[in-house]
Figure (spheres, helix red, strand yellow):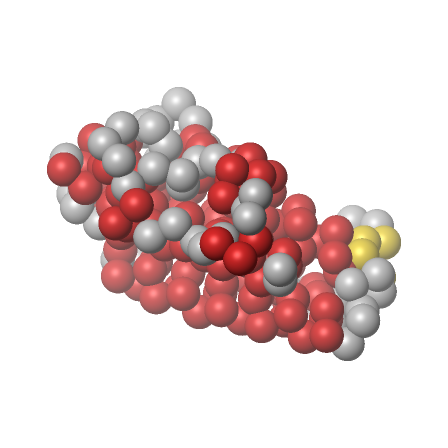
Length: 181
């Protein structure tokens, strides 16, 4: 079993699914104040994406990676930005694993030493936490598509424990697996 690959794919899938379901919301709904996350659903998505980009920058050797949390941009732009960021993050994580550098360290913006592997896990756990603030809240009210949210807010460990009891049959859940919430 490629545990790292499964965790990265789960993280990509879960955020992509939440973005797809939320695409049915109006701009007013995406920008409506919520009591969780970063104040609005759009700002929460932007924060998730910016965090992936930011920590990927550190792991790639940038000393001051960009951290753009401006909540502008269309929903299509957020989706495209997420696709790029998650693909780059997964490619970098796999490269670090393949080169045996998950224990390698770098110094972050607070002058704290962090390991590459620890950073990868922290980004995934961070994203899971913030997806949970968007689910079952405003995104769940997107209408019939809400059934596609099944599994999106699960912590990674719970998701893997429930799906990976037989690693030969393990696969990332697809939209067709969804049950009504």
